Image (tube, rainbow, N blue to C red; front, side, top):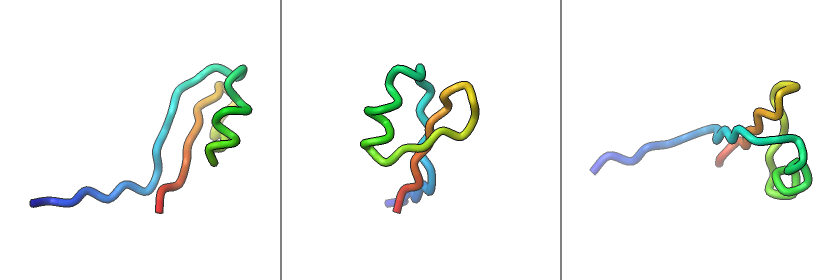
Length: 40
């Protein structure tokens, strides 16, 4: 069995969801609301 390890998770979303993604630990990477979260 192979275990995959991811370091980042990306979500494409609109700016009006900023509060939701910020509360979940995501940050914007660009000005077009491309959100990411570093996974541990």
